[in-house]
Length: 282
Image (cartoon, rainbow, N blue to C red; front, side, top):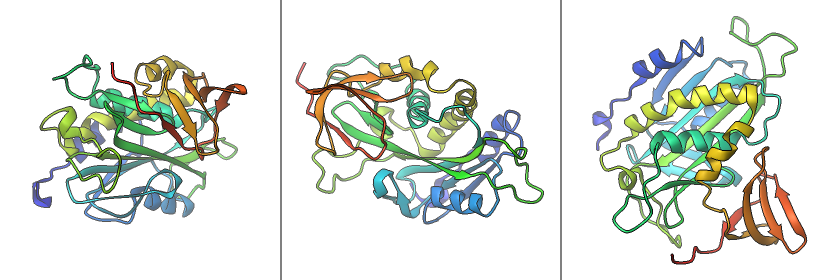
């Protein structure tokens, strides 16, 4: 796929989303350091209107814990959605985003077994993995204090809103493992022929609807849907702080529940990296 062959559904997405999100705009940039970084820059300058920013190439893409996410043109979907949001509780937002994206890419989980396409699952707190513990994509959620620019469609003074930027990076084409124990997964393995523009079209409208639902109801309504795709459930896990135990799903607030030698622990810090032990053969 060459850059000239990429046709992004910007107008179709705008038409689908703007009735639910007034002031919404779509921008596609050929290259930028990071879509998340750019929307956060704008927010801090007072530009807080709802915006979908898509980059064909990132030169300094960021993942969680400062990890780098870079890709050639057409090889990945790299996007950030920024909008004002005022939920009563922010807990579990990245998990809810993961549920929305996974369901948009693969609405029905295929049966497990040889000859079946990989299943799109979720690894707490913000990764999309497929069968065989292979990373398909990542989610980075950041917020900025809400700053109203003159003439912007900002929320009223005194609002509890913050400007939230939801960054999503997904491997579209197969890529090398670069020394990883398992090579990354790709959308082409999940669904042959699925392109970055088509994935974008599938993801964005349901994501906007989910964020608006999250604002009113929080993560709790998404808990059961997360559980259907939870790749850590019932597996031995090790945390970066040295704790180890067995994962037992997530709570209503999105906390990871881990049975350790010291009892059941609710892990809430996004700065704690969790790694599963290899899955046993079925």
